[in-house]
Length: 451
Image 1 (cartoon, rainbow, N blue to C red):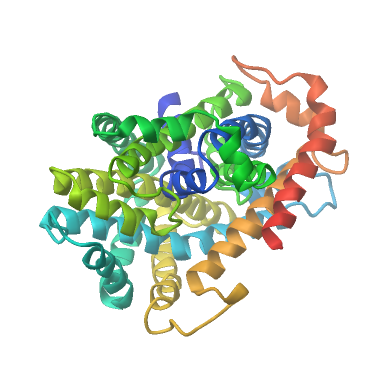
Image 2 (image 1 turned 90 degrees about the vertical axis):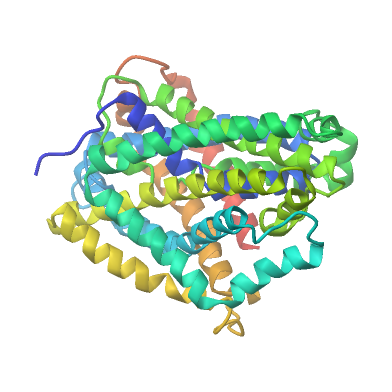
């Protein structure tokens, strides 16, 4: 079967960035920045993105582009006879399924809130208790959560069933264009709110005093974690897009562009949220409830809040759905490469499987709410822990060691692939950093996440 290709370089960059741009950018980034003192955290985040995120991203893309298949078959094509690196390809596949088993539910929450603002469920002057009750009632209703999870799953596999160019690439271009337009409109609106300047200063101006209060060590490790997790590296989600790439451009240049798009959306999300929070006297460090409880309170107090709330959750829906369809493509490509299935068959089988496998996460908030798993967390918390704290860092370490060690593909082969084409070239002197420093940084993230 002939390998599909992206129609354009822009398509590759938008789909890859769409995979990276998700709930981690527009939900997790602002509240982690808020909890860690704002500006200093942002500064360290950008630093770690450059020295950790970009290198590991080039490695995932290199394995995909050189192997021209999904993770299992790419490893098989590049590993030496008798080696077993390809086993990690199956672990990547499990990680993608596990991620979608809860991500589809949270994506469904975004659709639900978009419709709630659109139909007037959130009205001007609602008190904080009533706003909080909307989220509580949604979690308690398995039918509502199940419906929007199912819509997310079915819509995602229908899009992907049309193929790489006609489905994933075409829809992502439209969604990403709309997402970037929405984010600019929302950011300009936040800038114009009374008292917005205080929020912008908190967010963008480094204040060592604030960072010291939180604990500089905590701020640095939180920035390292966020920079690492924002790109969803380690489970082959990016590797698959490497397999669809041309050899016209170097991987270093493409990785930087993907990171810039990803970072732009994360930074702009903060520029929407922080001025709004400070303008209405709300602390932007409310943790996961920031999006579904704190911000709706701000919107209900704001002139025209119903419109701004609708636009914000439409933006959130696009951000989360772009990740869903990108990871679904990975699932389909694995089934087509490993089992020889057609795209239609892979879409049907995976659609049914992911739909069923996502039900426990929905029930974990209501019917199975008494279920306590890893660290006393519910089903979503447990699935997220396994992906974020275990599979992402461990998987990134495997990709890294495969690319730079003599027992894997080898640094010279990786560097040759990464530097093929026009654009930014990685220097050979990075070998020592890639071999000894980068694995240590990833191990720190892994250990910290487990303890």
